Length: 135
Image (cartoon, rainbow, N blue to C red; front, side, top):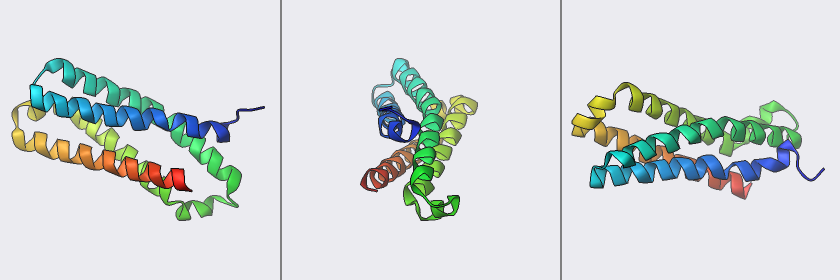
C-alpha cells in the first residue's frame, strides 16, 4: 500500500501551515485596507486551519510512534513540543476573535496585541514546521 497514516503526514502538514499564514496575510490586509471582506477571509481561513490541524497532528503522532521506541521519546521531539502549543495559541486567538470582535475592531491597543500574538504564533508554527522537515 503506497499510503499509510505515517506516510501521509508530509502531505497534510501543508494545509494548516498555508491556511494559518494566509489567515494572517488577510488580517494584515484588513488592517491596511479596512475592507470587511478581508476580515471575513482571515476568519474563515483560520477556521479551516483549525479544522485541518488535528488531522495533521494525529498523523504526525502516528508517524512518530512508528519510529520511536516509546511515547517517552516525545520529550526529545522538539517539533511536536512547539507545534502543539502553537496550535493552542491559534485556538485561543480564534476564540478571542469571536468573543471580543467589537473590542478588536474599536480598540487599537487590543488589535495590536492580537496581531502581535498572531504573528508570533505563525512564526512559532513556521519554526516548528522547519524542525519537522529537518528531522
